[in-house]
Length: 115
Image (cartoon, rainbow, N blue to C red; front, side, top):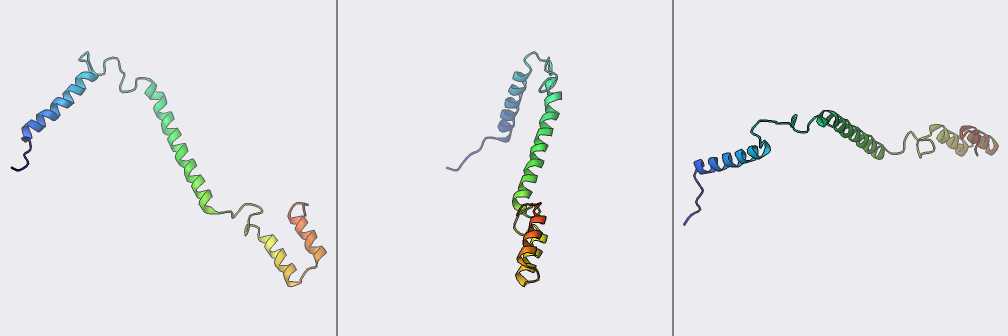
């Protein structure tokens, strides 16, 4: 014996009855939105936009954090590869264009007085 399904009329009637029962429970007085002022009452006018702003603030914050984490260390002082002046100074010292005293003085000047 094969699988049998209920008739479409019976299925439609069951769905209608389930929906009707839910609506009847939501408004027991029989008056739509009796004393509810909509779904969340008057507080929905305040907390709805606040929650929306909070959601978008979190979304933007997560995007900024992700970009910073994936972007690497370029642009931060002292980061490897981030300070081109220090690189040039080290290259000139390595080629012998400047001496040790001049290198130390220039490095201290670039680091704001710190050696």
